[in-house]
Length: 199
Image 1 (tube, helix red, strand yellow):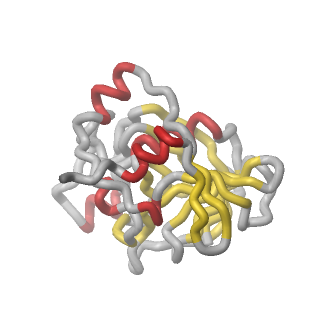
Image 2 (tube, rainbow, N blue to C red):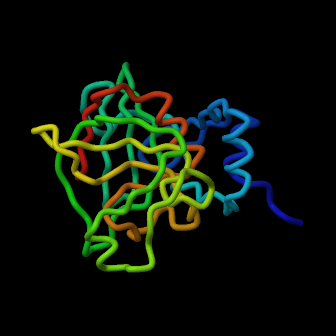
């Protein structure tokens, strides 16, 4: 008999888990548009590893509410909430050759964005090419575009993925990938010009 998906079971029961170190409360999925539902259904979703599922937790970052903190070694992204809470999401991070750290700000948010791979990426992988937004697009359902302190585009993004099976791995070219349902949730919460810290 096939086990029900862990995340679905939590969403239906509103369960609270006691995992090492703190309490984890499952959060409901965000509302989706008809296009979101149609296109996200075209990206096969593996069973969610509970280590990388979306939870509300006690804030471990100490940062101000509205801040995004990415802990690359943990493969976790935290969105800081008021009252010392945070939403924790599992992510894919840059592999060793392409990882980065530092502070940035969100300068643009986009739904089902087009993808324009930078010249460096095309040089490494000549088969990649620009794509319109959609289920086959590597940026997935949403993208948050990051700028440095001077306002210059870093070319790094926090975005969805068409490879959800890689969540929890170091497998990207430096961008932070999230499950599509999770990046929609984050997109709906995060404000313009939000601070992003990548550690």
